[in-house]
Length: 406
Image 1 (cartoon, rainbow, N blue to C red):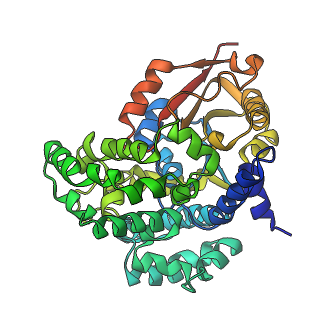
Image 2: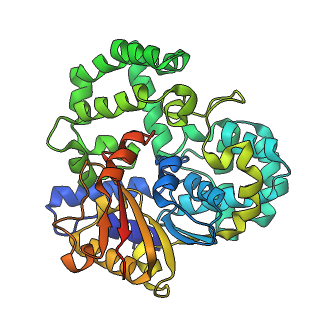
């Protein structure tokens, strides 16, 4: 019998009304997704916070993922952030980050732990400052071993951003690129957006024309490492060859934003954050925000739960902001309806919902009941602008909905 975490993930991913081959692929993804997927979240927190317009004292409901954005939202001074995730590894990672910022002695040790994430000193700090204050479940996770027999906490001594499903995927992409005489790290030597464009056009764009790459990316399982299940693969492809779609998304990541401002590009091309003091970092790791994040970390409530179930157990008119990442791409119409019924019930006046989609359009029209959708105002022009400015570049659409007046 599947464990509770596995059943929760399978319920969210496996399309019970799909063909047998679809269900088999969905189950394969659910199996892959039960371990650590994202050591770093791939949604731009600056876009999030601008779209959400978080005000001091507000309550936020969000999917946790790697936890970077959860802690980054604390810079806006909300009263509480309720973060949920179906993935036990992500829950443990969020607990680790929350306890670490509270208990590590200073900013340099905090930065070394999560920005560099590759020092033996981090393991000593874990034992001395963090482990005694972790919950038992999270501590067992970090002190346990992965499938390769490595203690999970040792990832912070060897480069944690090279681990997990996404880290392994990026590592495989680097290997394939080097086999084709392309070194992704060379991209980080660019000194201007113009140089970034020249390197991309000369080195990376032709890579996606190779027959093997086009064949491989046409397999729905090829993007499991990006955390993309088969159903979302189809939405991302939009009827186009996946190699062309991936080239366009990588082009945006590589060419639309200066390297000195885009830590997502550093993760993609360098497999970690930059080492210099001026290297770009997510807000929760920036020195200027350290004191605020440390002081407010207790405001994060981390739950191993489904978002709909968490909201169903909450009071009416109890949340101001909602962040769904790209989870709705996985949902059936019935699941979308159940989620938005609870969102509408728990939303306070002026509530905002932010989510992303693999495809460009919002997925709600034509799928969500009109009685629910009509309660919300879709900010189409603003959403297009947020999509354009999302530095992670992987999503087709960033979408903002605002509750209409009573």
